[in-house]
Amino acid sequence: MSEQQFRQAIESGVPDAFPYMHPLMAKNYGQWDWHDRPRPGVLHHVAKNGDEIWTVRAGTQRQMDTGTIRKLCAIADEYAEGHVRFTIRSNIEFMVSSAAQVDPLVAKLEQEGFPVGGTGNSVSMISHTQGFLHCDIPATDASGVVKSLMDELYDEFVNERMPNRVRISTSCCQINCGGQADISVNVQHTKPPKIRHDLVAGVCERPAVVARCPVAAIRPALVNGQPTLEVDERKCICCGACFPPCPPMQINDPEHSKLAIWIGGKNSNARSRPSFQKLVAAGLPNNPPRWPEVSALVKKILRVYQEDARDWERLGEWVERIGWPRFFELTGLPFTRFHVDTWTGARYTFNHSTHIRF
Ligand code: SF4
Ligand code: SF4
Image 1 (cartoon, helix red, strand yellow):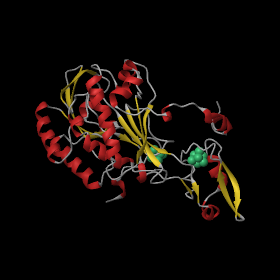
Image 2 (cartoon, helix red, strand yellow):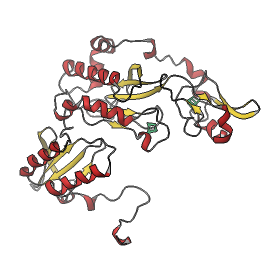
Image 3 (cartoon, helix red, strand yellow):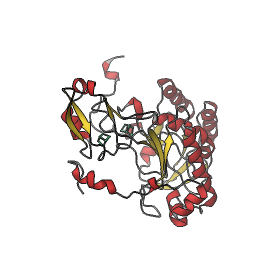
Image 4 (cartoon, protein in one colour):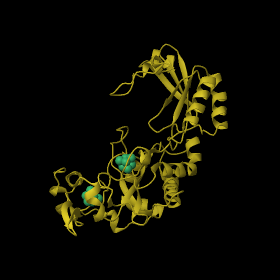
């Protein structure tokens, strides 16, 4: 292949989307009049000039091998006019310009094992953080949790039978990626790092590690005459930020690194204000390869929400209406002292940091 055939790399920002858009979408950009959903997984948009386009949405495993991507592209070429796009939840969407193309496309996707759904009041694909492929912090395999959970929630992806849309996210540490979601599964370290003093001097730049800690809990130290680090465990919030610049600060632990579930987050201001998630379950075992405890709990929360919420109530809106005591009663989740944040540690943490000042 000659050099001219490669697309020239753009070093900042994403490429211009217009050359890659379905021509009907490019032509009618900003000119759509109305839309509906003929069936779960299919969107139908009508432009002011009468142009119509159907979008078929399918779930993927997000982290895909090239063989799978080639298979999806071959489906696009044969059944969908050669255009695809990915949503922020790693669903793939195929666009077609006639209603007659929808059923054969859906049948082909289902035959190849890609579930069609994720629209309207369904549980759409889980948005998860990058995990081991791109990051050096993960305490667990976020994409593995997602795969296990979505296998369990398959029927809720291909149907629209929730009171409103449900957005789930997972994060493989507590500090960086992730956002507000109706249900969020997060890693929770419960013990400060154990330090491999024999390795620190040879591996870590100690000032960089000291600067990394958000609560100024790390300081230089000497152990057996060797320069190393120590952690003030009264301050440490077990966030794990010191591990990437200094792997001898070992915080991942099969027993003490747990998973927690938070609910009621909302990014949009539609119908009600955006809201932060709140902790509802902590200390769940990080139990690969199927994380059964996490799946069971998420399914239980969804079942109660489905049975008890009013039409169009988002999960957080439902809990705000019925009250948190009633939520714990209905779901049978234990309410423990860990759910109450008294901020007693703040005196030793937040105002001592060079990074966070309140
Ligand atoms: S959530 Fe944390 S560990 Fe996971 S990819 Fe983001 S920064 Fe890395
Ligand atoms: S970076 Fe996080 S885990 Fe490491 S010592 Fe500081 S608070 Fe504790």
